[in-house]
Image (cartoon, rainbow, N blue to C red):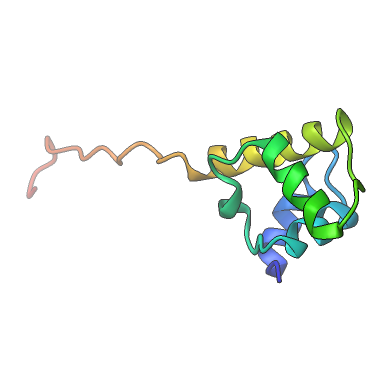
Length: 91
């Protein structure tokens, strides 16, 4: 199950709604970070296989999944290391 924090982040992504989250949960996605490095076409195929029939089709499904993947990758990007000002006295 997707946590409340991740659910909120995912629902803020364009084209992502409750049904998208249900479909992702059906294939074991439990957090936004699980989507890093994934391929939207493969995810769509996996969801359709889990459902036993094609319930999701391109282009909207792929666009929604790509938006989520992009959000996951942005979130996973390392922030720049904080700079330390060593010119101050006592440091």
